[in-house]
Length: 216
Image 1: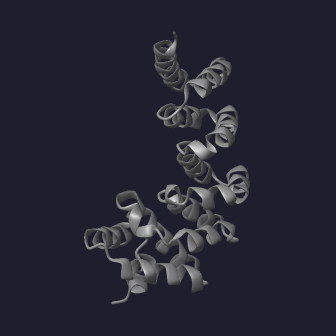
Image 2 (image 1 turned 90 degrees about the horizontal axis):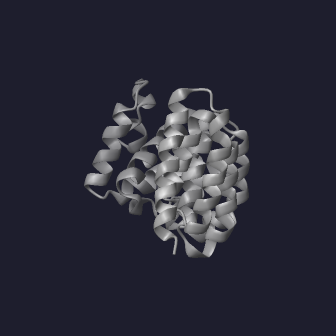
């Protein structure tokens, strides 16, 4: 059975169990041949279900062993500009698991990623933030990426605000920490949901403690 026939929708299955099983098998055997076959499907197929399943398998592979996707950037990135929203966010989800392997290429193509984050779904934006944080970890791009992350936090929907702040907080510099604190303190009084307020309170407490540890 070829890879295409292993995809969930090719078997008439609407859940992700077959895709998850396929990804696990690929990771367990470091099956580069199957990865190449999936990438060829992404390049050639016109069927949205095949593209969606292929991207989902790559996403699950990337979560476990991103090194297997070292050659996947171009075929996955190309699908960010697909006409269907589902394919776009599937591509962004997959790309976010291995884009850190290609920081220069990712940075050079950041305009497409940022446009899609602005226009796409919450899922698209979430994984776009993950890509930005991956670039932020690189010294060469931190100065450019910091303001972009600050924009994402400033404009984040209430239910995404805590998530974005928590992820960035793990790698943030002292200079950007102070900026993040200011934005969160500005946003917190506007939050309606008590659980969102509590989450931001916890984030701010950790940020203030970290900031204090760096004070002379």
